[in-house]
Amino acid sequence: MRITKAIKAEQIRILGEVYHDAKPALEFTTPFELLVAVALSAQCTDERVNIVTKRLFPKYSDPKDMYELGIPGLEALIKDCGLYRSKAKHIHETCKILVEQYNSEVPQDFDTLVTLPGVGRKTANVLVSILFDTPAIAVDTHVFRVSNRLGIAKGKTPDEVEKKLKKAIPMEHWSAAHHWMIWHGRKICKARKPLCDECPLYDVCQSAGKV
Image 1 (tube, rainbow, N blue to C red):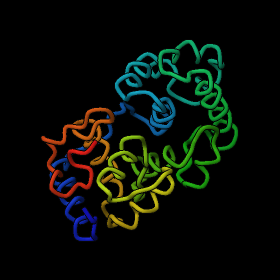
Image 2: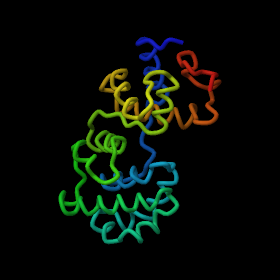
Image 3: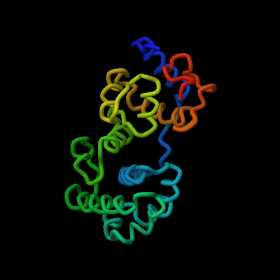
Image 4: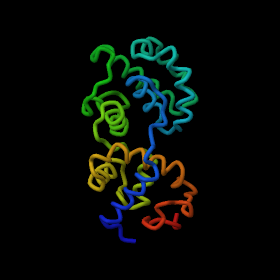
């Protein structure tokens, strides 16, 4: 199937119709909590992150308290989150920077966010989109997979997919489309056994029945 602009538009329309009420699965109450939650979500399910943050945030909900907890203390609380050593190190370094340079506030600027330890384009895009209402598309593993399978944005790297998604999707839908594709990846277009027979995009997907 050749994926034309018309087909891409139809893919976007269907995703928006099916997942119109999609919202972030990570639980948070402050910008800092979301920053930490997204950092913990690398190679970890949102469900697991929410379990971890439920025991972390009640006592350590701001950069100063979390920094004073120290790396060993932070490691102990996030140990079941995967890659916990590197995550603890990055989060601890970020807390120090937030306290010393930003009055314990999360910067609103994308270019500033990506200078924080462990904060890449995906995390920064999530933050500016959800917290600061800035149009953005964060390419996580679900968005990357769904984009390539549908053919709406094919690429070998998340950055490449992000650039192509921004061309294929109207800017006013960028932030919402991120959530549409995440939920589609979780519910239907799964990594190992996609439910093609149940997929509302079957007729406009280049990979339908082939994965």
